[in-house]
Image (cartoon, rainbow, N blue to C red):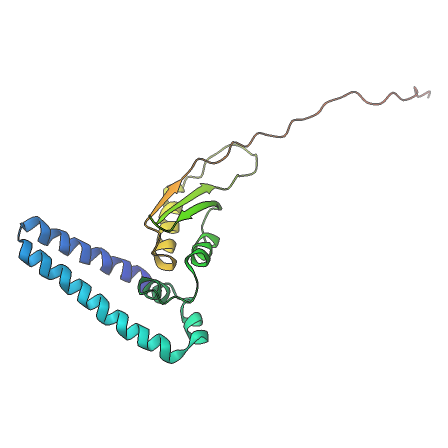
Amino acid sequence: MSAAVDAREAGRRVEEVLDRLAATGNREACAAAEELVRALMEFYGAGLTRFAAEIGEAPLAAAAADELVASMLSLHGLHPEDVHTRIGRALAGAPEPVELLGFDEGTGVLRLRPAAAPAGCGCGSGGADSARRSLEDALACFAPEVTSVEMEPAPDRQPPLLQIGTRPHSPARVP
């Protein structure tokens, strides 16, 4: 299991613990846990900011190619690439081609559409859910600003119209 997957799992575990605390009804403990998470985020963010300033832009950009590092830099607003570039990077690595329709920076909603597939047998992809999860994981690493993905239906692709006509008139052959 990669470090990036471990980081996502750690994030899920933090959310689960906070949810369990909230379910107890103990508002004081829940507020304290949330404050602890915020303080730790600020602490690690401050350290990461200092580190980024010390190493400079070129090494930071090289390190940002790693999913875990890219995720951490993005989370703390330190990634050297803008969000649109990082979204493009995640989409370029998508298991199935998608067309970017737009990204709303205010809401974090990314609108996509499956790229038109060439006309063929019309069989759908059996791994659409797996492909979507893989794309969402890449977006979570490279562009955590994306809070949700809305997939619009693929455009209808009509097979090309086959033009059938008569052959030009040719003289009769004599054997």
